[in-house]
Length: 175
Image (cartoon, rainbow, N blue to C red):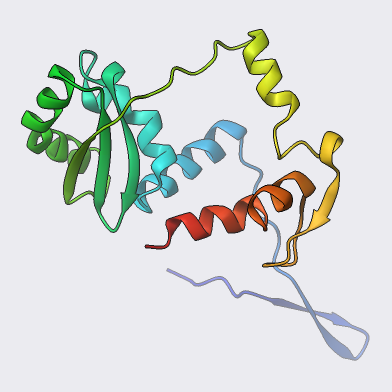
């Protein structure tokens, strides 16, 4: 199998000029999203786990518990107090098996009591009120520069956390 060079040269007059390789063909949005989902899953990203959670935990257990943290192969799951906490504790070994079979790099599941607050209904007045004051709203708070990474960032995020949302995510991921 022939390897493709990273740069190409083109003869222009008496000189060889380096030019970049041709761009890869354009992919559809669906295939880009599939690629992103697979990368998230391989890297142990919590977002991929949230998306797959109802299928992995099952229709009876999933509404009463949710993944909270995924660090170094250890998944912390919060469950409603009472029988749901006990059911998750009892079924955690089956859950580890289901997670591994789905391609998630989980070696251990820890269970803790969690009083989940229900999310506002999509399109509700409560959701609109939350979004109205959200720190990532550039049209409300304006743009600034993250003092940590130097990237442009919403000023609301910088006021709230002291740096941008990406730096915040990175800081939360560190043990």
